[in-house]
Length: 102
Image: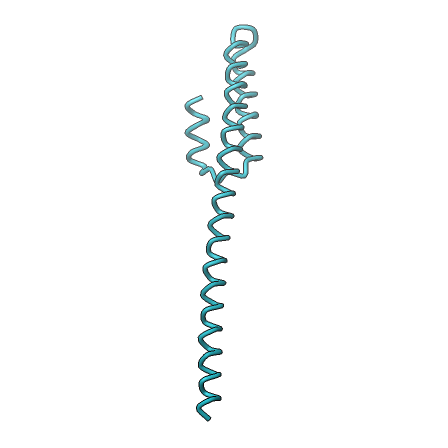
């Protein structure tokens, strides 16, 4: 009977070790995925900020050539498009703050 109990105990220990190793591997993978996602968000946000800067520069350049209300409306439309396409988790307050400061 002791041999049977020893085998059972060893099996239990091995199963716990496997579970622990799996938990560690899964946690590492979760962290890697989160880090990759955050990097992707950062890159896309930078790309959108560059695009917005180009639009704002074009807006400033054309300010004297067209009516200002038309340009302001177009700039707002473009910002809305960029914010809608974004996978970033921008808050509404952040988007409003950027729109009102521009």
